[in-house]
Length: 309
Image (cartoon, rainbow, N blue to C red; front, side, top):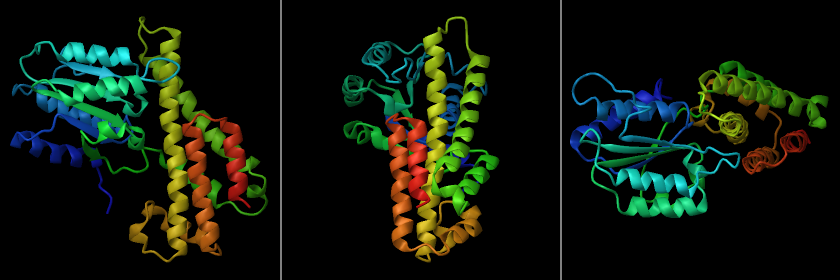
């Protein structure tokens, strides 16, 4: 059964690690970097930095906590950012305790930055801890991933609103003429993505400061939007995997989207295993192409055309 609160469950488990004094110096936190993964890390940091006082300091601007994220249009974390991390972590802790570095969207570490960060991981300073937040851990440099313990937050829907999930299911369950060309379902998914893009822009605008230039704001909106798009495409991909398992008669308890097992069973009706497998491959290809920033409209139109064949 899925956890009601995967962040709290992971934190309670991590608290036992803190109490035992057996913390590793680096963790990959697998989950949406700006929602569940961030919430988990904030809970951990609050536990590390309250100094037994019961009062939590401002974790966003604490002198012993570094927050690193993609800043430019390329959405790549650059080597200069990592060098700054190394330089600051080599200094004495302001509070006399832990020094922490949180890399938001760690899969965006560039090649040169990854190599520089690897050296930092290989020779960590005392009482230093790293948290690498990512929803695409497969894109991390293997030598970095191998030096980190992994914490997986099990909310597979990445905080997609229920109404969004239902609209996506409606798109994927539509039959007949709607799916033949791929244009209509592509437009419906495009409308969902456009709503996420607007929300990202509104959220960033509400929190921007006078120091944020247009390029920084644009990069943050783009990063937030791409996270939402990844969540949408992952839902589509996992849906088709569930349909494939349903075609093979796998128990509903093994499905990713257990709460939609009725709709999954209906979608599986009449599908051959070969066709269901092809749909999974199409959905995976669509997600991979969008992760590579290929033209969104073309990817969706062609992908849904193949899904409707």
